[in-house]
Length: 89
Image (cartoon, one colour):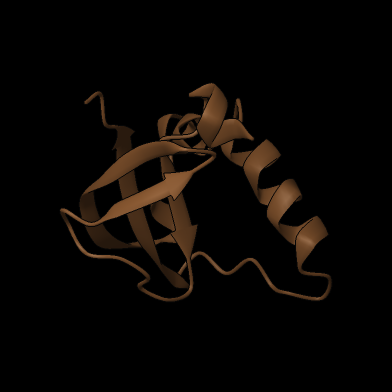
């Protein structure tokens, strides 16, 4: 929903799910992956949280931990970042 509304322009996951240039389709809208890179949780900034659709890193952290009960939030833990944008054809 946040992607469709334009408030989410990146996603962070444990695995790499796309490559630069790949297209994902959500509700008949196309989004192109522009950047894929690794980042540690300790490197997250409030700007990164805003890419995810949250106001702050703490808000993002609490949301993630609510989806994954018992998961530790370790600053050294690395995730894959997938940044994307809407394709206007």
